[in-house]
Structures are given as structure tokens and as C-alpha cells.
Length: 519
Image (cartoon, rainbow, N blue to C red; front, side):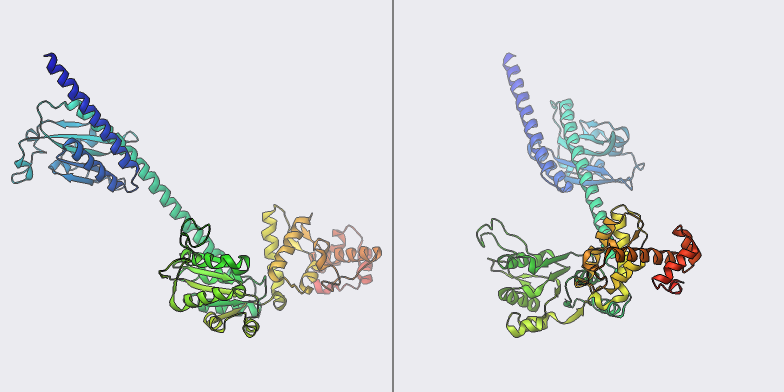
């Protein structure tokens, strides 16, 4: 008897060791695979290999339809494994889900819902045992793990049940993590789509501000080329909005849901431009510790905006020409060609024709790029658009800086429209932002504008003045603002300035202000 006791203890110790090793392997399988179905199949394979499981299945309840379905299965199948709708039939699976309690059937031949039908593989076995354990998530059964075991008269079913309860608990945690990951993925997808919609709205045609003839022509050209895959060359001075035109083309094209990648040739040194555009393989040069995708690969399916293309060096121009001709690239240090599906939009402020004559730009590349050319007009040729843009920027920066600025004064408008704007729209935007910051009231006046607009050298709008002349100019601004507010009503304008109508009329005549222009 003592000898038998020692043998039993050794056997129990071996079984416990095997169970612990199994739980460790199951934990690794569930944590190392993002695909839940694949992880559950691995769990069943481990049980079959380590515990002589003849068959197993993981049944899950669909969160929407409430239908029970087989998520993973292997080996011998019994009728109790079959998925069904909740409320239909009286299978063991449904009993476990309804009661949230495990079911242990030592002899399946004594359970009508589990006994194999004549001709099934089960008839070839002497006898089977069946264990079904609920997978509980949030205190509610979300599925079951069910195993078929060879019948053993000396099997400790209570110990076996406890073991499979632990397995079910581990599966429940894996399901929880999987659902959290799926929820995060769904949330990110929704946010991504929302951001795309915002970008599409931001770069819609109607958001390119202006009614002048030159900008209307740009609208028409963008509308024509956006729905195609044609290479586009955007030309114009710095600050004219070439990047915004490129955005409008992309977000109004069939590629709108794909990436829009931008790179400036002028912002990168010559030694880096090729690696940025085409990527590189590991070991291509000192410091290349791993392979890296270039901008062309990152823009796959979408659009690559290559700004300041006139600054490309000759070797990069050759490679870019090959990309446009063959639609394939080679990474630095690589030997294989990579097919790409990318639309190229290039932009430059430089005279490419002059560069070609001087040998600084390849003629064949120019003709490849200039399939469809759009000229972004300078702001000095868009005089009617200056105040539309100014009002837009006033509203934008007043909101951004928390100020209640309602309008621009008449003298300030005259200064804005008479300036020649060498920096184009970008300079106008910076000017308005600066004016909003220094403005301490609800109206932007001439003295809020930067000195470049107030000196004769820069704008030819305001001459050098003495103190008396400066006071007179300020007084003239106040009178004109009051007349603008009252639409030329002198009596009302005098009351706004807290003076008499006689004094107001005297000042108007003194400064030669025509009140009729404000009606």
C-alpha cells in the first residue's frame, strides 16, 4: 500500500506539471497571435497534443445576432458542438450558455444530445467523456470551450474541470483584448475617414478664395485635371498657393482616399534627396542600419507633391524621368525594381525654360512634367481678391487668438489694395495675423499694419509726415470710418464721434472727404 501511495503521488505530480506546462503554452499562444481564430486553433492543438483530447471546439455567441457559431474546432465532432440560435433546441452548448455552469458527461453514450449517430467516427471508439465550460466575459457567458476525451474510469473529473475553467478564463481575456483591439481599429478607421472628409472639405474648390478672372481660370483647370491621373506642373511665384492647388487636385480626384505625400527639393540637401524620394536598402551607405521606404512608396495609390522641382540635381532628374516613363523605382543600394502607382504633381517658382538653356534642367524631364501646366497668378494680378482674402484671414486669426475683430477700416483697406505684395498670399496672411495680434479694438486701422505697408519705399502709400500731419491723417481715418459706418449720414457720424454736426462738416471739408462715396 505505501508503494501504491507513492506511485499515486508521483502520478499526480506529473499531471500537475503537465497542466502547468500546458497553461504556459496556451498563454503564449493567446498572447502572441493577433488573429483570435488562429490563436484558438492553436489552443485546441495544444490540448490535443498534451492531454489526448480527441476533439474540441470553441463556440462563441455573436454580439449582434446572438447566434452561436463555431469559432474554432478540431478532431472529433459531437452533436453538442453544432452552432444554433439561442432558444432553439436543447443541446449541451445552450444549457451551458443559459446556466453559465459547466457540464461534465463522463459517458457520452448516456447523453442523448451527445451520443454519436450510427456510422459516425465515434462508434469506432469504446467510450468518450465530454466537458463543456462557459467562457464568461463581463459576468455573462460569451461562449463555451468543449472537449471530447477518451473515457477513463480513474479520471479525476473535478480536477479536469478546474483545469478547463482556467483555460476558459484565459480564452475570455484573449477575447476581451481582441474586441478592444477591434474597437480601437474601428475607431481609428472612423477617425481616419473623418480626417479625410475634413481635408476634402478644406481643399474643396470653393475654399480657394477669389473671384478674379485669373483665379477663376485656375478653378477651371483644377476641375479639368483632378479627375484624371495626368502629371501636373504648377508654376508661380513663392506664396501664390501652389501647394493648396495641389491639395485641391488630390482631394477632388479618385485618389482622395489614398495618401498625399509632399516633399520639397529645396528643403533637402542633395545628398539626401534621392534617399528620401526612392528609399534605401540596409547597408546602402554609412548609417543605413535598416531598409527604409521612400516618399514614392509611401504615396502608393495616392499623390506625391514635389515642390521646388527646379532645385533637383541632375542625377535625381534622371531617376525621376525613369519613374515617369517606367512607373517603377529602385531603392538606393537595391537591385530590384518596385512598381509604383503614384500621381506626380510638381511645382516650381523658377523659370524652367531659362534653366534648360543654361543646362540646369533636363528638357526631356520638363516635357514629361508639363503635360498639364497650371499657372498660379501673383496677388498683384488679383486685386479684387485682396479684401476677400484679408477678411478670411481676419476671421481665421481673430478666432484663433480669441479676439473680437469685426472689420478692416477704410484707410487700411486702401493701404492693403495699393500695396504690390511681393510675397503674395503668404505675405498677406502674415500681415493680417500680425495686425490681429496688435489690434486692441474691434477694427483694424492703418497703424496696425506693418511698417512695410506704411513707408514710401515699400508701398508708396504713406509719405513721411510731421506730427501735425500724422494727427491729421489719424483724424481723417476716424472721420472716414464714421461715415462708412453710417453710410454717409453726417449727422449720425457726428454723434458717433461725440461732436457737433457743424464741427464734423468742417473737418470733412477740410480734409476733402467726399461723404457721397460711403452711401
